[in-house]
Image (cartoon, rainbow, N blue to C red; front, side):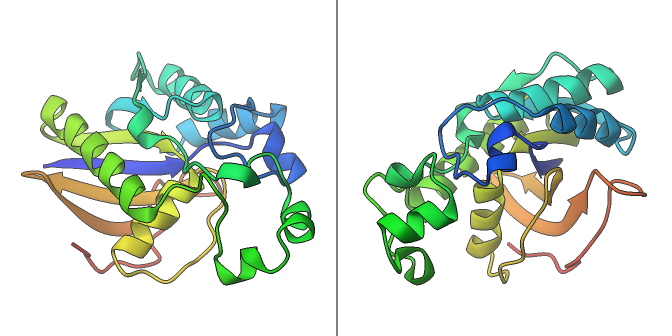
Length: 200
């Protein structure tokens, strides 16, 4: 059984602007790089580090991996953010201006990646890790949209997540089990559980 610590990347420059990122590739902000360095202090015993192929995730992963001695980072596009189509690069205010009411009702634009597509590629990416690392803890640096979709898939209510917050996911025999939320920032250890119930 492999234990995945799936976390959102550190702050990017588009996070600062409040822009929807999707498959766009803005870099980490200076504060984001500092967040990643601080997060490494809350990790112990990580076997390896995997990340989305987008720069904000890869940059976060590389900083952490260097700090904990778990490099090199493996990138996998299966962990990249949801494609948000025509909303990419826009703020929520601009989306409401250009697509009035669509954000509130979930009327997503052309190019929006479905939950089914995202879950399929993330499940495949999780199995690739399990094939390579059969046991232990693996840090996966991904994106908020991936984490929210995983939680929704397992029946969890929506709860906003900050940079370097995430989930513990167990993978065994190709089966994913959602555990609890984790946080790599703040005052404590890796675990900051908000829902301890196992979900399959």
